Image 1 (tube, rainbow, N blue to C red):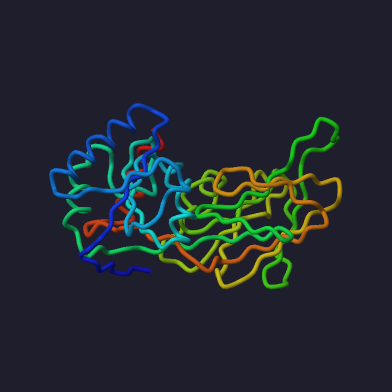
Image 2: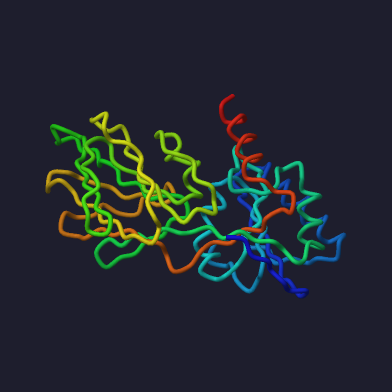
Length: 279
């Protein structure tokens, strides 16, 4: 879904992954360019600090964007990604395009924005969120005779299938180009109101990725007490659901907005990134 962000008094923030010198160099250049254009952005070093800005320029790779996305979405902060990492499916600019990014931030009003859906994963009384995906993966234990996991998926109360293998991925359209793609899942365009269920190394050839409407609720059921299961959201470990805890996945009541370049094209970016990835 595309929207336009109008606000002449736009407040700009900058968040940088400073884990590597190359990220800091890109940040330094961006701040100098913005200063020359008369923009004094707020600079954040920790996710908890993010607030009181309309647009947040995020410098790093997709991992950095995923790190801040949920907090930004909850606060209604729009993201503009500048790729200082390796792949950068979620970014609008590459590292060498900092000048263009600065010009857009300073004089690009009104911004055209793109909304990305978020997964809400309810485990018992706890709720976790994912912009990309939720991974239910077998939990390795030295004592187990069999380290595969049996997982049954239900959508709106109807059984989809039983998946025996390494686990399953439930992905948003945004995450369809991430782990789900590596596991053989389909690519979904960002504007689709859908999620995708992708088995990971299933022990049956009939198990295939399934795209379903994001208005539906999915339940994940374990095959038994002996099936140890771990949950990861956007690549980060969050918990080991117990056999007694109910697991439900649905669309969150908030989304994450991204600034969209006026000349941006999903398929151009996809082709560029896939060619870069396949080298």
